[in-house]
Each structure stands twice: as C-alpha cells, then as structure tokens.
Image (tube, rainbow over all chains, first blue to last red; front, side, top):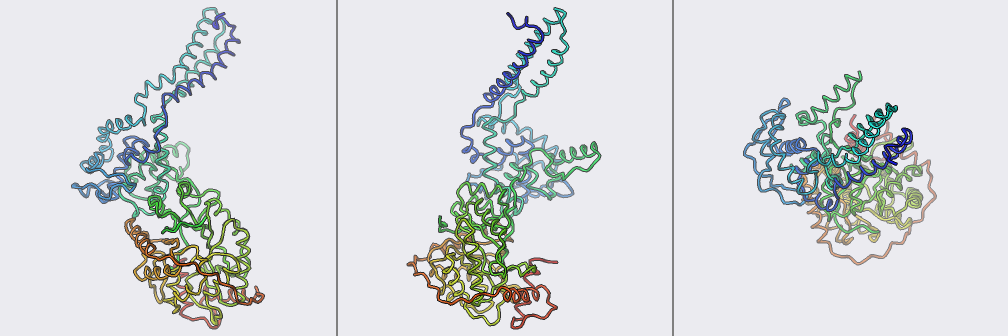
Length: 308
Length: 331
C-alpha cells in the first residue's frame, strides 16, 4: 500500500516521526558538508593575524584589525573621530610576529589599503577593502577553512527536508483530490518550510575553520588579557591579532573603537533596541558581533605591590 | 614536584602574553587573593594546561598576627593551590591586621621568642591544612621594633626547622632592609638554613623620599643583580621569580630584564648541600593578648599619626610606613 493512500491521521503519524529521521539526516549531511577538523592545531599557529581576523569576522574584521595594528605603531591616529594617516611611507614592522612566525617582507595589502586611503571615511575604506576579499577567501578555501559555495551547501543540507516536505505536499494533493480535510497538514507544511529554511543554514566556516579559530583563541587568551591591560607589551601585529580574534573588548575606552564600522553598527543596534524597549541598553561595547567575551573569573591582576 | 630551576615572571594579565611566549620561563607565581578558585582567568588556566608550573602566593593570612590565621582564608588558599595545580604555596612572615585594624600593608613582626613561638603555632596550623608544602618569605620592613632580641635570620631559621616549612628568599627585600636599616644581607643569608630555600624573589626598587622601596615597578638595577649573584653563590642555582606589578613597559625591556637575571643564574656555581640547622632556642608560651596589644598600638599609630606613638619606634620609620600606605591607598 502506498503511504499516500494511508488515512489522514495515520499519514500524520508517519510524517511526524519522519521529521526526526529527516532532522538526523540533515545533521549528517551538514557534518559532511562542513568537512573534517584535521590539522587545525598546527594551522592555527601558521596563519597571520589578518587571515585569522578574516576567519572570525570577514573582510570587515580584517580591515579593523589592520587599523588597530597601524594605530599601535603610530602610522595612523584618530582625530575628532576620524582616521588621520601619520606615516605614508611606512616600512614593514620589523618587530614581526612575536609568535615566531616570520614577518611579511612587504606591507600586507590590507595595511597598504588603510595607509593609502585612510584619510577617507572608514566606510569608504571598507568598500575598497572588499576588493581584497577574493584573496582572503582564496587562502581560506585552500586551507579548507570556509565553505566554497554556501548556496550549494545549503541546498544539499536542505535536501532531506525538501524531500520530506514534498512527501507532505503530495499527500495534501491526494487529500484535496479526494475531498478530504487537509487544513492541518497544510498548516504543518508551512511550519515545515520554516523549519527547513532555518535548519538548512550553513555557517560560513567549515568544522576545520571553527577548530582553527578555537585553537587560535585558546593559544591567545594571554594575548587577550595583556591587550586589555598593558598595550605597551604588544607588537603592532600582536595588537592586530588581539582585535582580530577578540574584537571590541580589546579596545574598550579608546577613541579608536568609535571609528570601527562594526562598533558603530552595534551602537545603532543598541540604540534601536533601547528605543524599542523604552529603556537603556547596557554597555554598548561588546554589543557588536564577534567581539570576544573575556570569560574566566578573578582577573588575576594586581600584586602584593612591594613597598610603593 | 619541585620548581624548575629557571627564571620565571609573576603572572598578571599584563605579563600573560610574554609568559605564553617564553617557554624557558617554566614557572610563575600568582597572587592567591586575585584568583577565584572556581573560575580562574582562562589565560592562566590555558597556560597551566600547557605545562606552566605556578606557585600560589598568599598575601592575606597574616601569619605573624596575634590571632590564628582565619580558617576561611586558609581554605581559600588551599582551593586556589588545588585549582592551579601548585606544587607550593608561599606566604609572608609578617602581620597584615591587628584585630579589626588593617594597615593595608605588611608590617614586620617583633623579633622575640614569644613572637617566634606564635609563628610556629600559626605556620603549623596552615601547613597542616594545605595540600602542598608552604614556603615563608622575608619582607622588606619599613620599620624595626625596638629592643629586637633575635636576629631575623635566626628567627626564620628556627621557624622553618621547627615547622618543616621552606623558605622563599626575597633578595629585593634583603636589599631594602640593608639600605634602610643597615642590615648585612649576605650575613643574613649565611645564617639561614639554605637547604630550605625553595625559590628566590627578585624585583626592582627605587629610593622614594627617605627610604629604598621594593616597588615592583622598576627594573632590577646592576646593584640588585650583583646582590642576586652573591646570594646564589651561597644557595647554589635556585628558581628565581621576577616580580613586576606595575609600570610594565615594553615587552623588549621586560624580556631584557629576565635575560639579565638568567645570566646571573647561569653563573651561579653549584653548592654542596648544607646540613640542616638544629633549633636551639627555648620558646616560652606566647601571650596572644600582649602581642595583640603591641601590634594594635603600632597599627593605630601608623593609621592615625595624631595619636601618641608606642615608645621606641623611629619617628622617621613610622612616617615612612605611613607614606607607603598613602601611596598604596591614596585617599
């Protein structure tokens, strides 16, 4: 007997339990689409700060990290809420990478972009930075850190759900043709469409990308702590890496934070939220996407202080 | 587990990244009162996971105070040591409160047999409650009790030999006491049971007003390094913890300071182990109330300069102590 010939209630029971099977299959397909984690720990030590920033938050985060790095070594400054380029003929930072990775032999393109166009608004510079997106994406793809075609990946992940919905639509059509009540099934199909649309979302990063980012952050918790408390202890590349991985919290209280597009966006979101709710938002810093939570307790700071 | 013989740097958020990237700084030290044992800073937890050995350093027990160390504080210290997998806990031979009076800085204990007896009692209580050995640190004394009867080195030696505790020999504090009170730092070291020295502290200081202060905010100068070398010539190579609490400067400068201390350590000749010291002093029963009254009188005069100071204390040293407290707790 064809399942389409089942009575309405029997079909609904079959279709309902089918949802669990579909959910499981969707998870499996998503897992396959997102790839494997091998080599993440090693790769986390080899990627530069801008590639890691890109992995965390796309070209916007990479650009903001470059702004932080250049500001740290005095190549740019913030005056009246705008970036001012102080040094156009900037050499490669000889301090290089404190983590032991060889430094670049020429200024990274994203730093070059900021130095060449920094006197424009940051939004205009961000617009220009999108031209570098292809380079970042290519490197991330070659390292297996991002999904090549998210639309295709999403379609693959959605396939079990689509098949399940199609099965339900077929039964609804049979029911309508036989003049049977189908209202409830149609309502369930509407929810099913929403569930599949939501459940088929595929993150930008592969599992390897997630693992590389997690490993990089884990290895850099000390950097996060020092970036928040003693910036003089950092090289400019350290400062860029700290921002790239942990975001706004590494710049709290600095005028530099105010020029960052992501921070401006977070203020806008916070303001709209406050206006909607009729109350004050909490601290605006850290409302932005991707900013790392400092986590951990007890600070660890201060000392017995000797005899001051 | 004993500490690795190397030069370490006190762990603070400000020094965390440097420590992460200096594998030969294989041990460190953390102020226990700054750590929540249930939720240590994730940067610290991660570096411990990667193998950093961390000593738990307490500043709140007030071992030399008249009252027994608070059991809650001892439990907390033990909890921090367990969380950080510390092989050693260290604390100070000093008092930090007198009843409800808290001067906000370590004050030296009187060098008397009664005080020694009290310290022995307190150190035994703490050592019994800790999961790992305890090391005791000599402090930089801003003032000296009048009528001192036992040399500080003898007091420390008797204390550790009677209790089984170890010694944390603070070289910067030795220097401060030498400059401020005319102590002979090397004679001090020669009088200690050197086999008990678990590790050393090294730190920079500066002359502020009338006295030399162990500030933990300045690099160790040539004289400080020379004293460190002279101490190591007596103790043999030992783990050295460089203390820096403020004014961290650039990483290059801090690394250069650690490199300089490493060179001094590398030049330390091995020393044949010294026989243990046998305690020789007869200790009287101690009178807590008498000790409490004397300490309270001192703390009151330090906190409130308007009152009459207890007899015998140097006015200059009392004023210096007040200046230190003002610097630590500006009003």
